[in-house]
Image 1: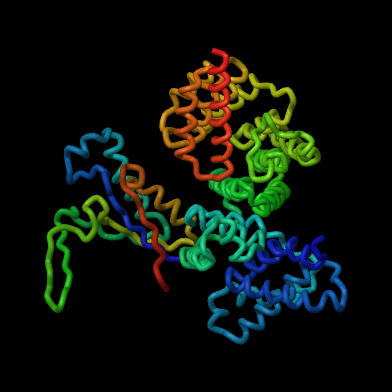
Image 2 (image 1 turned 90 degrees about the vertical axis):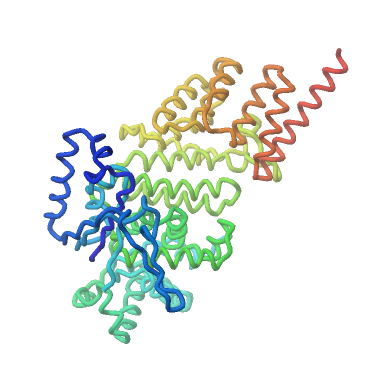
Length: 118
Length: 400
C-alpha cells in the first residue's frame, strides 16, 4: 500500500520563527533535522518537498468564470500543510508508526495518513 | 429453547466469518459467502442430518461459494488474496479443522483508526453475528444510520490497509486496551437493561479469555462483567432501580459469581493489577456480606491512581463514607474537579448530606442530580430519595 503522510505543523516551532525555535532545548534543535533525515532515509519513503510558511500562501477559486484570489491558505494557518512524504508500507500500522516518528507529531502538530488510490 | 440449528449458527458465525475474512481478505465477500453457506445449511441439515464438524462444513461451503463467485467475476479476484491461495484450497477443503482467526478479526474491528462507535458496531456484526437492525435498536439509532456506519468502517479497513492480524508485541498492550474497551462498552450498554448485549459481551469476553489465556486484563474484564451481571436480576424491581445495599441477594446468580471469582483468581495468578483486574476485585468484594469497606476504599484508591479518574474518586468517597464517616466521604466528594454536570456526584452528595442530617442541603443536591439525569429508572430513584427527605422533614416537624 502507498500512503501520503501530510505533515501539519500546527504549533510546532520551526527555524522560520526564531523566537519559537529558541524555546526548544539545544539538544532538541539538533535532533529534529537528524530525525527528519532518518525518516527520509527509511526504506519505502519517498521524501516530499518542504513548503514555505502558510502566510505566504495564495488561495485561488473560480466563480462564474471569474478568478478570485485571496491571501493565505485554504484552511486556517494552524491547520495548513507544511510538508508531506510518500510511504510504501505493508499496512496502516506501519504507516502509523512512521508518522509517530515525525517530530511535528510530538511538537504540537499532527500527521494525516491518507492511502493513495491505485 | 433455542432450536439446535439456530444455536449452531450463533456459536459458529464469528469463527466461520473470521476464517473466511482471513482467507478472502475481504469483509463483504466473506459475509456474503457465510450468509449463503448458513442458508444452505438451514435447508440441508434438517433433512440430511448435522455434519460432524458444522464449523468446518460451513467454512468449506462458504469458501466454495466464494471461489465460484470469484471465478465468475475475475476482476474481483484480482482484488483478493484468493488467486495466490487457490492452488491449496482443494486440500484445505477436506480438512476437518480450520484456523481460529477470531482474534485477528477482533483486533481488526477494534483498530484505533476506526471510530469507537464503528468498532463497537463492527465487532457486534462480525463476531456476534447480530443483524444491522439488532445493533441499531440496541444503540437507539435508525437502521440506515447503522448500516451506513458499518459500510463506512468496512470500506475504511480495505482502503486504508488496516491489517487483519494480532498486533505484534510492541503494539499489543495499547491495542488490547482498545479491544477490552469495546467489549466493556457493549457490556455497559447491556447493563442498562439490554440483556442481549450483556450476554454478547460475556460471549466475547469468554472467547478472548480462551484465545489469550495469559493476559490478566482479559480475565479481569471477564471477571468484572460476570460479577456485575450476576446481580442483574436484583438490580430492578419492575422498572425501578434497586441499589446494591437494598438488593435481594437470593436473586443473585451464585454460579455466575463463582465463575467471576474464578476468572479473577486467574487474573491475580498472572500478577494482574491493571484497571479491569482491580475493578473485578472491587466487584467481588461488593458481593460479600458484610462488605469489607476499608479494603474496597483501598482498591478504589489504587484504581484512582491507575486511571486518574474523578469518577473513581467519587466511588472512593462512597467507600470512605462507609469505612470512616459520611463527613470524610463528603470531604472527598466536595473537592472533585470537573464533575459538576455528573448527576452521580450530586446524588452521592445528597445521600451523604442526608446521613449528616443536613436535610436542606441534601434536598438541593438531589434536585441538582434530578436536573441532570437522563435515564428514567435513575430519575425515579432520585425522586424516591427526595420524597423520603420530605417525609423526614414532616416527621421532624411533628416532633418539634
